[in-house]
Image (cartoon, rainbow, N blue to C red):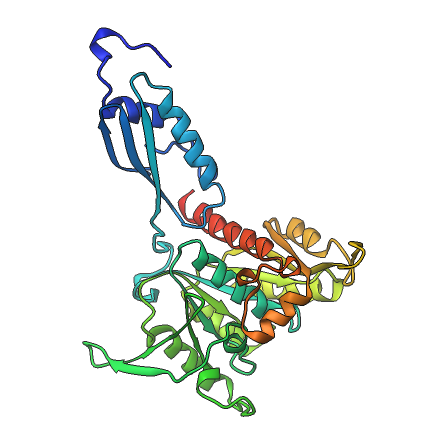
Length: 361
């Protein structure tokens, strides 16, 4: 501990602030004090207590921040104990015009793919539940109107209720699954009923799902986009108040070629690319432990390097991932080894961290 002079022998809040001003935020840069992350500081009889307000509850480096803050304070003479609470304040995206905001929703994230069959909905469902497990307030909008799968994947069913708000607007009440609010046309049709609509009707419905659903308060609204770059996907990308897009692919060349098209679509409408997720990256045989690159290898890494965006994670192919999607039990709610819940959770943390970096640096 650093010795104090006679005048400084009384431990004060100023001493603690000075110590914490030397602790850096590892992702955003700058120190915890200058970034106004220290809240509710108290010093009583040598016991120091304060909160560190993170930009997201899913911060992947929160343990490092806590550890370094505690170490800095314990260096002070007169400190007998340190109590740190980690809180979060997920701020609303300030890069959008005010009229584009969904009331009470801080961030809107599109989960998209250049083609179907790459596990986009699986990633969207697990991303939403993983963020909720981290303590975030999360909603999911199933925008894949012609093939709504989130009700099945999240094990949600029931009837959508509505009420009239103070402005006389009819507001739908989303259902809840695994701590996540969910809206889907799948709740409004039977399982064997096709949606035979033209683009304008789909766009109108999805606009209602955005602005006439009681979402608030949400830190993240996850949009499971329709596959491809057709009229509906393009209209959604243009009209939704998107914070950014997460792109899902498999390693194979055929998939990555189509993913580039999806990326270019978002670029043309000025939607930031948060990063790439490689799904079905490889398969580990449960009996031998041998790894098989069923869909090739390295495709997402090459794509990320070419586009200069992060590779957010590589999710293995697992039987429990598939089975959980059929049974309404997301991988992050399954502790089976081949559910790879920890991999999905790390992807969610990287998405949250990337959004914070995009917004606050």
